Image (cartoon, rainbow, N blue to C red; front, side, top):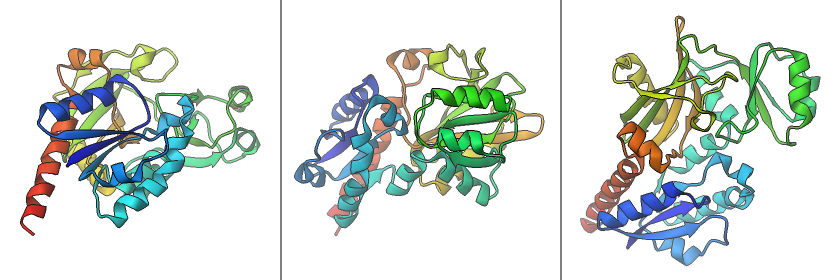
Length: 292
């Protein structure tokens, strides 16, 4: 029996997860969500680890998204658990859905002005400035803009793809950084400050500097775990903006990523920690099933 890794991106993190799980003594089936799913292979797994990113669409990996509802249905019919559960996948692929769910439960988030195509965006009268405009299903700051005026909005939307964009309130990063937290198994495993780049965004590939954040307030850590509980995310990450008015959840991810140099930079192996969580859950399932 085995753990299945459902992936769509042939990158270091997927292979690192596979190798770590194998090193921990558990067999792995590597299942490419961009190919036709072999149902027998999928259903022969005891546990599935979902690695289908929201940003898959920007790599031309649309098929991985279109196959997910069928994959989820198959797993639910056979009672095969997935990390993260199906609910988390649907939060992963819609920033509107996750943000509005958090708002409905009293968590501090940016105000959502709406979700629009580029043409609808420039015709909307309900957007306030400055605002953030980004794909409703996306990531890694692809087509993400901080917009200060209607003129800027019009210019940015000229070359934007014809997809759904979410327009949100802009929360100013008063302290010059965005807080990144990796949560695994209801524990804040990694807490970082990520600097804001010259264009106002914050991301590793934009040159943002990272610093450890051990003094992160307990109130934020507790709230972060509550957010993940609400969204059914067992292993994922979030971005938070802190300022003198409080703190705001600006992005939630149910599929976390890292590169090999990130491991050295942070002195923390996210893929090992994720693998260890998956193996622990797998062994718990085997023990439970063995008692029946």
